[in-house]
Image 1 (cartoon, rainbow, N blue to C red):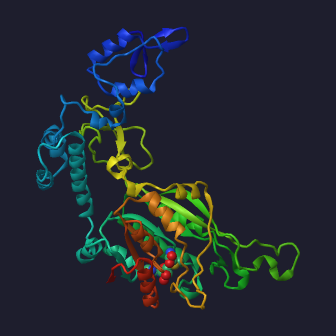
Image 2 (cartoon, rainbow, N blue to C red):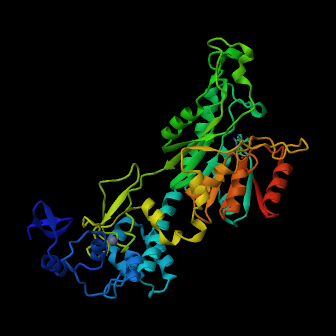
Image 3 (tube, helix red, strand yellow):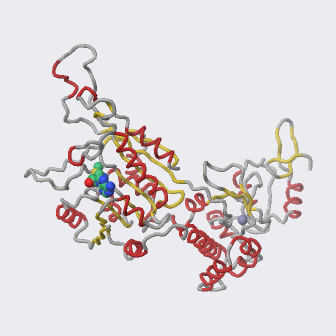
Length: 475
Ligand SMILES: C[S@@+](CC[C@H](N)C(=O)[O-])C[C@H]1O[C@@H](n2cnc3c(N)ncnc32)[C@H](O)[C@@H]1O
Ligand SMILES: [Zn+2]
């Protein structure tokens, strides 16, 4: 064998490399290589005179199944097998108590469950034990946690979100979507200056980082308002564009989040007459009207270096992968019986995040993002109108706050959460996020400090959700 092309023997013909049938077949038998080679040859351009025959049929059924479904009868993975196979590592990592807990969890399943299902059950149970360990480091409020978990009804929490977040279990929320209270907005102008406001927000962001599940997302809608920061002067002359989006990004980063994206919400025409500047059409008087807001996307990636099982074979015989994503620990399977190899003949590479994203059990109808939404959000400037909260009769339909349009939580929830998961808006206002979450099959949770509009808000929720039961909690 003279040369290697992507891990397989080949010969040099002129300046290109070709596979030679006998070399490849010899390699196949020496390496006991099996089905992953199918994938390999199906994706390669193989010269026409080179036909490679394998001993089992290549049919569409095999082609379309995931690699772990292809595991052959001579290599059956069961839950007891995985416990034996991973014993050394489990003994090292887990306490006696945790190991016992894992065994108890697994004992509920039949010993005959095989392959893909066995790998999934083992992996989920093992990850659940690790997660529990992390969660036990923080003393959360058990009663509150029960409330959050007792049903999938929409949940209203009345009170300060900082206080509520403090009571919550670590990494128990799957997605956060919010627009924060506006600095200096008329209704709740409680901050002396911009820095006080941002420091309060920082504490809430810090607590949210703990509560948000690992490798999950916070979609944060904020506008760059035109206002006085009250830091140097309080006069109307002190007004300027406050780049809140930028200030928030810095705070989020300092509190551990990764800033990933900034989608601009184009609000279209707006009511302000500011551009007229009192009709003084001379230099230095001209400023445009604000017609955009940021939709910032942040990821949480808490680095966790505990090994996780290979999603294909369930082995904990894995090594750290050098090409990690920022903050995401990733692994490469070293189990020589594992049946998935890359075209470069590397072991399966995976992370907690890629396992979640590639989990075939999550690829069900409820999680498919519709074409309309995909199309609408294909560019990073997206136009849709703001909410008009005063109805035809002049009544305020939605309570105190400036609600954001449903478009924002709809995109956030469809793009960054799965069916049945918990979606939290810590500044719930009229509970737009929670309502949309409920409609999309998620558990919508909102925290709101201002109870003045309680009945308006509840009526709104009940109308939107056709009388669905909601639950309340006071912190
Ligand atoms: C911009 S509004 C959110 C609007 C919301 N996205 C909606 O669609 O209705 C901000 C809300 O946060 C609430 N708020 C302010 N400080 C809070 C706190 N510490 N805890 C909980 N809610 C708070 C305000 O009363 C207001 O309703
Ligand atoms: Zn593997």
